[in-house]
Image 1 (cartoon, helix red, strand yellow):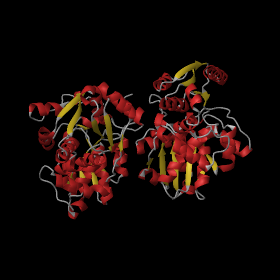
Image 2: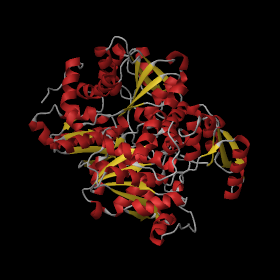
Image 3: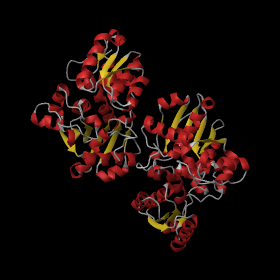
Length: 319
Length: 319
């Protein structure tokens, strides 16, 4: 067992995390595309977390948090509120450890998401589709079961887990100039920025964000956590705002955040589908859109891009 | 240079072909899926030719035929009639060799297909959407340019190229019980059946075909090449009937052909998209549909499946 983190993960913390979660995750492949290299003028290395367990990098963070529980805590189980990839990841991590999972989901969550979590053996608690109801129901289930709440991003244990995607990418690809990831709650980007800082003097960690929900971009500019007036983006995994832990890390460690328009995201998503023949969520296309928008700047650079997940509703594509 | 084949490819022919075409093709990965293994009760190994150059195994056969031309023949170029993957493969092979390609396409072929071939530097010759017009226009362009016609499947050179997909699969995965591929014109299946026979006493080569276009199934039963009354299948790559060369090889070497219904193909296609996060054509889903339909028979077997291509019209999905 490794200990829960009460501080920003160090290199040793991330390395210990990686060792611990290895049995629970896939080492995902890095893919390249001659066509996309030609179109971008850069050398792109796509870290395929869409092939991760549950189809998203979230498995790393959930596993990292779960592996830090004592056997007593484990026996009481894991809990979270999420109808998205984090909920699936917590469910699957619990299943792999043979412990219960309790997932609070809004009553209007797609049936397929509920079924997926149930398929991993989780207990679904239905709530009203408001943040208040989600939090109240989560509190209740934690009180009743003694399960441990795993936050989707504002948690050093989770951040240490997410850092392992870039860790693997740097092991597999030498001489990178940039590593890019999309920014939602900032868990993945925080872990990525930390491991890049620890392992390289040359690589820049750059975030990419839809202009429509550019709260992280504005937060770093203003020096405090900003919200979004609307969350009307096709990149539905990125609607969340930063937490204080991810905000602190990103403020210090991030090179910058590039924002892109909705149409640019959809075009980049379609390019990856059509040219690379892999299924990615719209959120993953945001970094590629940022590269294509700034071709001169990234010309001939070696750019790692974390493709965060592949869970899409095939009946509701943006193209 | 290797010589053109006037006989059924031997093991040495296929090995020499492989050596020759290596610079023109990708070595595609083999993917697995815990979920699909669980659902099928078998161990499935997917040879991902959807990640091949031009997005389809056809690149292997086109390269094999092209590499056998003399320098005089090469200079005059390659020709074929195809609005599909074979046309793209011939175009791309010619581009890689720095020689011309002439592709006869029906006037009603999708604009995106024409643009793709043009993108590889091919000259497109538009014709009426009938077989007669295609053949007449092809004959004309061959007469005018001296280009060499590359048949999509009824050609020993092409068959030797297609055999290299299963060759790589057998190198990467040990102890296979079965290798399955879909059957259209029979070029891939012929090459697969041959290499399986040459390299293994244990592996069975099994074809999979839509019931809607089960001409190969009926041809092997009746002992002569049968046609299809209709070609109304979602697996649009498999509408072709066998040629005499592929018929001869399949009659002798194939273990059997399993046929599946349209709905089973669509379900299997969707499973691969949703669970494996990769984009495949409907044609590729036919072998998985055959396995899922015969779970008892394939229980616990190690089954290699050649995913033939990933070129789909995202605006026209069957789900």
